[in-house]
Image (cartoon, rainbow, N blue to C red):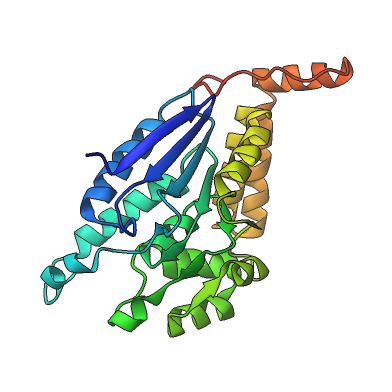
Length: 262
């Protein structure tokens, strides 16, 4: 039985983790998710990817703790941990906008998975946290790096040092999630948002994501240079011709699909 399902609604791919009872991040889930995102990232018919968990208990309740004892005392785990980073980067650096629908617990690796997405929508009953410190560990899938970049160093350290869970409302207050919705309404809200994104230029969306992601890692002046390069690139694309013409003609633009040559 597959642990990952994919449903297409137009240009929107809905990826659901289905590993009951808590959608834990097992080795098998990672393997299937990795293949799924590799396929979706190369599919020009997909413009937005929504990621969520089956049921209402958990988006993903972290790693499968039963897999940890075999790792204790092993000094040769670094390649495996770097492979984990490669997997999460596959989501973070996808050319497609990604939206996490946090419909329950998002703990440890589940929180890190949500952090790797571009946008996070939390249902009101969600609980989010990085409790690895309580196991004598640290978040090893990018959490110590992505969380401070999102909520700031001081708040990130508080969450990392204490391992506390926070509510959806608190996550919204500190900027960890973009929006909080009623329980059961997360996917609906994500589809609405994804639809708005799909109405815009795929080439522009792709370059916007590059400008933000790459710019955050560069000194400000170099980031501005990168922005200028990506801006220049768009003037050579078909979408800008259509967008400008549609504006002048007072009509809705008909942008091309996300293809490799646009």
